[in-house]
Image 1 (cartoon, helix red, strand yellow):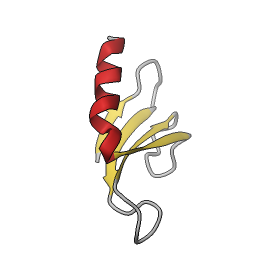
Image 2 (image 1 turned 45 degrees about the vertical axis):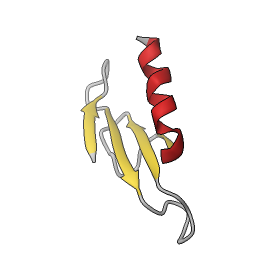
Image 3 (image 1 turned 60 degrees about the horizontal axis):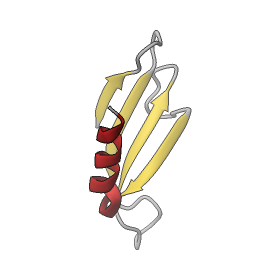
Amino acid sequence: MKTIPLHSTKKGTISVTKIEKPYGEDSAPVASIGISLTGNSEAPDWKVHIPMDNLDEVIKALESLK
């Protein structure tokens, strides 16, 4: 897991991790990105799961926002 300080907050964090079987035995791995305003990466306020097969395209889209 990688934890990044959330800009413009006192304790907020962004957590990024890979989950191998997020929805049970037959599910495919995902990249999980969580946002916590309090710094609790175990119980984020928001989270998104991105299928690993979509990760390269999502990274390119995020890079284009810069």
